[in-house]
Length: 403
Image (cartoon, rainbow, N blue to C red; front, side, top):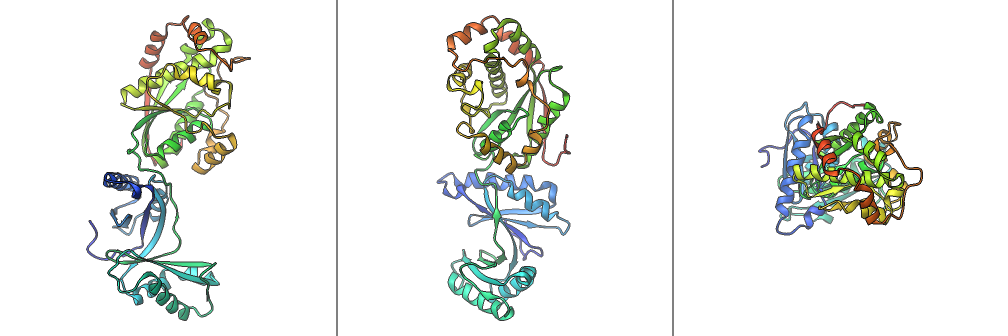
């Protein structure tokens, strides 16, 4: 549904990416994306959000909307590839020129050259895109005689879009998050540690439309309360992209102490990882998730060799997704900076993965040897005990920073 009268304020035009390539189920992707945008804008004021011709329109309905926060939020919605802040006007050359003169006055004041680029989504408009650009560009050149027209490398590009109800004038759109709408890729449980890798892997799978629940393991007194708060802060930072999520906090101390007392040292990390996967899978069964997500990268540490990963997957009955598997640390750090988790990830609060680290971990384990070493433990009882001690925390966009 659109408004009956022209919006009094500028609006946002959200460009769709991969969604437009969908076939018969495209409308379900579009509906999910529109609902996700509405949900993410609730804290920014009152907006009308609707979709027309593969573009989502976001129109403020009150003057006190926080437009800067809304613009930032729209850029972080998965499924949106670009966001433009635009001024609507009547679909006449005169109205378009007048709107460009006033709406882009500051941009014209600093530019030495410009061009006009038009898109005619409404094919009933009497000028085609080239003709419209020529007419609007000619009028603007007369209005700003000190600015030259440069169609190849201009300082300023004036974008004009002729759409269903109005024309829209804007400068270049800025990149959005891309990917697919959250909720269209199923649900998965992500193992969230306090390091660099797991927040990035979680973000990457959320970008493919996967709704996330998080699992974090704590080992007091070997890990501190600050380490837990660090992880909850990482989850809070991810909600800016993923929306609200639940973090399951599972006590892991007793399991680690039993491993240390009963298992060969070289297998400590491998057996610990097998317990983590069992527990994450138990959480996945409770929340009806279809996969697990980890931040493992092939060969990065001893527990991430091909054979070691095989011993970990041995205890899983659902898929384990490893989006970082072929990435190196430089790439992961770059992505952590991009999504805003880097500074928190490097805070010096260590998680339970650093507890009882073996001096000489096994990098080429045999599955039968790991199973034999693990047989000294009452696996089912330890898993059940840890799940009974599970706690959970809802983390939402707009929550106060925890660190």
